[in-house]
Structures are given as structure tokens and as C-alpha cells.
Length: 287
Image 1 (cartoon, rainbow, N blue to C red):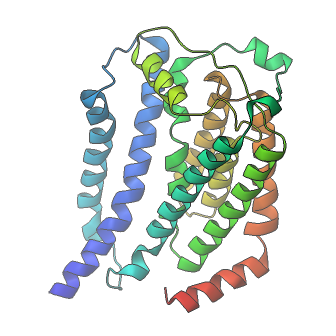
Image 2 (cartoon, helix red, strand yellow):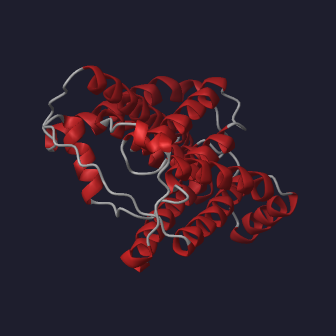
């Protein structure tokens, strides 16, 4: 009986977290569309975050409860079964901490601009900030939908390799842009101002938002679920475009981020030696 409970708990966890991320991303896309057509005025306080977090939590819980009884998994629920979730959070910590560390190392006197004709033609669209913020969830989704621990290690190695190059380029050729601060009082305006206040105006090229989003989508293409594959592509493209519509990045930052993601996906993620090394680490870690 106890073993059966542990098995069902593991199945529930494996269903709950990916569905939570997808529900959150769908809600944020919905908020972007609604905010674009209507002046959404939800106070950016406890009620706003209750809605943003509460709705996905309820949706994921319902999905898990309805699905757990029809899923079958033979193993117990332990460190080995939760390893993809652990590697995902480790990767997220390394990404965010490295980003802010590089930002602190930059000197304002060394900054460059990559403004093009396209940047001047695109106006700020505060409503797209909700899609912009889903980059962290698509990153975690690439780990949470992974069924093999050696593959989750390979995903982590690929992301770390890409972020090291990303931060190295940011340091060698620092790019900054003058922020366009929205003056409105809508929810989107307030959220975008909150994002701008917590982010540095440099660390632009190449865009880690775009590189992470595209690499995540490329990795998710190995999943069997066709809807998830399409959703990841739509999300990755949407996230990349919102880096320009929120005036967080230049157009060339997107191109740089995409190129970096494609190169690392091809030469690192699809590298047979990296795959063998990931399996070696899995055995050594006994996961």
C-alpha cells in the first residue's frame, strides 16, 4: 500500500509541474492579448499575483487529479525520479545569477548601441511584457518534460555552455539601450516598469531571453506530444519578439541570441560525445 502511494505521488509530481508551467504560460499569453485590446487595471499587488499564480495552480491540480489514475509508472518516487526537476532549478539559478553578475561587472563608459532602422519603427507595447516573462517557464519546461536523467544532464550541459558564451560576448562587447519607460497606469504598464526597475539596461547582446527560449523549443521538439512542440515554437518566437516590443533589446540582439542557440544545439546538444559523457555522469551520480 505504501509503495503504491509513493508510485502515485511520483506520477502526480511528474504531471503537476509541467502542466503548471503550461497553464501559467497560457494565462500570460491570454493577459497579453486582453491587455492589448483593453486597458486592464488589476492592482499589481497581492490580488494580481494571486490570479497569476492561483489560476495555473488550480488548473494543474485538476489536470493531475484527473490524470494520475490512468498513468502508469513502475518506479518509486525518489531523488532519481525527481532529477530532471532538480537540474532544471539548478540551471535557472545559474542563469539568473550569472546574468546579474555580468551586469555588475560592466562599465557604463564601454557601452555600444546596436540600434537599426527596425528598432526605430517599432513602438513600445507594454501588454507584451506578460509573454516576455514566460521565458523562465519555457526554460524549466525543457527539463520538466524530460523522461531520461542522462538527457536532463545533457540539457544542463548545453545550457551552461551556451550561457557561458552568452555572458562572454556580453562582457567583450557590452551593448546598452535607453529604456522607454511607460507612463500609463494599466496593469501592463506597471508590470513593465517593475521589470525595468529590477533589470540592468545593458547585457543586451546577444539576448539571453532569445537564446534560452529558442534552445528550449529546439530541445522540446524531441517530445512525443505534437501540441507541446507547436506551443513551444509559438512561445519561443513570441518571447523573442517581445524583447523588442518591451524595448528591452535591439532587433540584432534577437538575431545574435537565435544564432547562439542554433549553434549550441547543433554542436553540443546533438554531439554524441556529450551524450556519452552525460550518461557517464548519470551512472557516477547513480541517478
